[in-house]
Length: 421
Image (cartoon, rainbow, N blue to C red; front, side, top):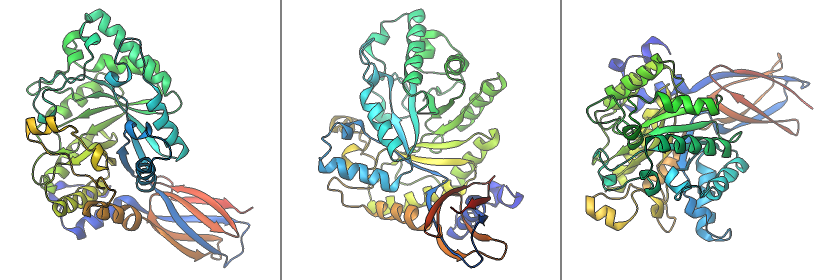
């Protein structure tokens, strides 16, 4: 990245400056050579997939509906049209509620749909040791994601069960999913030591053993951390130090997950969020916003904040994608009136209402992914048998001479050759 774009001190929040960062970090000057085509041949090109993950959770409940159910059809149509990446929420307590009794089919169904529709996938999470002991996420404070049968295990039995869990999920998705969130929400309030249930029982002072177990089973997979209270909260310094200690211990951390739940009336200042992203980017690891959601009251305000957040993250070169925590009103977190009333938390704002009418935020989001961040056009092959154009990094379809060709352009690959058939 050029020096003029690398300093947070020079970063501003105006639309013009964000546009300049996006232009610099997310676009390239592409050259494609055509073999077997005469000069002057017309070529049309359309970006079919942006090289930035625009993701969402998919609810397993929707896959349990009949295939001809109208809500299921609408739900999957929106997922296919507006998202290129899917997070599969395969939590241990849902997949193995009773010891040895596995509930795998809903998650395989989601993956099969993703595969058929050419969506990238990431699994969250292999281990989630939330024990209701931390109040950083108040809506979760009385919940526990630890199965009763797991609670009855001693340390030795727990370690064996966790290794079986790893073997199960990594075997189930072997050759299907390469990115996993290994540990979710482990930082304690005052210490760099993990504060999750599993580490407390096992007496682990770092997350190193979990990574060693996982990488021994599947050395080709990428294992992410995931933490809350980073962009809104005060955990960023501890998170940085936890990652640094793992790397210094020789652990291969696959990426950095940042939860994007915002509980305030407005997003934090853009400069503050940018500075935290900058601080985490020192490791040169991919950064993903894994659970975006705002508990907004005003729909227009939410639309403005969504636009600001997406453009901010898209402008930052270290961020590889944003995953929404669902998008349809009945599926939004947190679900359940009792939970909402008890803690005074509203559901996070959706893109589409229960009747599938779009919110202002949906209109903004649709504009981003179908208009603002899309490159398409046409031109003629020049005397050097080339076509040159500037566009967003991504996958393109070229139509020339009655045939279609697919080419992907990235930061590291901005030229290609196509042989016409």
